[in-house]
Length: 260
Image (tube, rainbow, N blue to C red; front, side, top):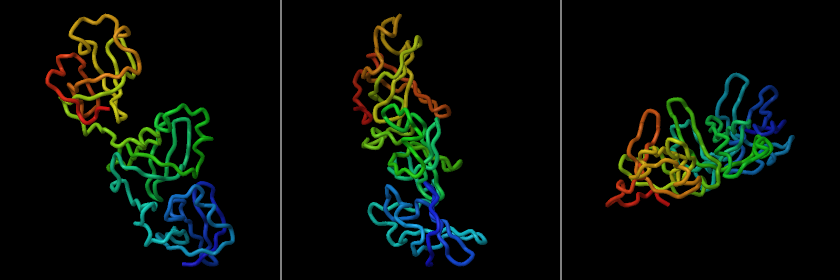
């Protein structure tokens, strides 16, 4: 259908007059086939455009401005109907919807929005979160979890996550697997280890740190130390990982693919 752009809703959509009484809303993800830094700025108010009606509810019309034949072309914004079409580890792009002190939400399509926790925004500390991720900002990220039953999607915008060749997921782990990681924190009862190429952390209890008696964990390890560990227990319900770092755990073992 033909129409005229009458208004741009910053970070959200374009409003297109389709007739004397009907106005169509073109979602920011549907403005163009390719991801753009400023998709809403592609068209000016008063400019005539051609669009495709994708849904109508009375006088409320949803339309897409992009050429549907190009949806499968390289570098295009894919049509994502629901989160069942997504998978953990997948690289995606989208536009920031809202931002708060807890993180932000990213629109992957007109129907699917992903959540980005504050710790997943960047590898570096961000002082002005809202200023760094305003509504409508184009971002690239990697999906961390996809809950098709609840319709929830979590993603990371961290450069380290986006550039990683493969992210290790909880479902990839097995009891007996030897992994690498770095000490995340030191507690009187043990150390927490962040597994390499993942956003997962496991606990190595003080009884599993060494063959010898350990009195002070701080004398053995420092935060950031590279370590190797063996997975000795996985709690599928709580999604917790128990690790062992005794030398006896590694006799005759080879490092898993999750190592650095």
